[in-house]
View (cartoon, rainbow, N blue to C red):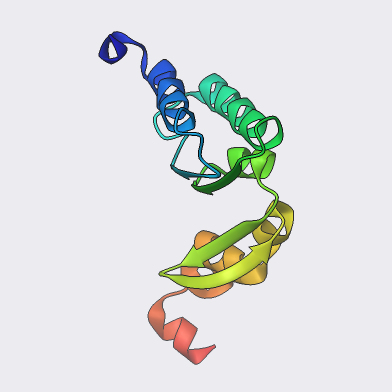
Length: 118
């Protein structure tokens, strides 16, 4: 029974079930959620094989930037539904709007009154 398999193996089974439908486009929502580092690396290899060996386009929502960087040709960063940047993983990760939205700006550590005065 699939339910008795380890979580990481169940994620691979989910990929297999989706691939059994012979899709042209595979939509993945947080494929690495709940996986450890080793399982996430394996998921990256599976996604790469799906793209290159099977020729399937993969659209994925993912927050693990290591996985995103490994498997993505193009990355779109959103903040509250608005596009911040589109490009390679490196371009998007270094984009000033992305850095500010996800890491915070220089004024974020200042009290509200100091930020207003600056």
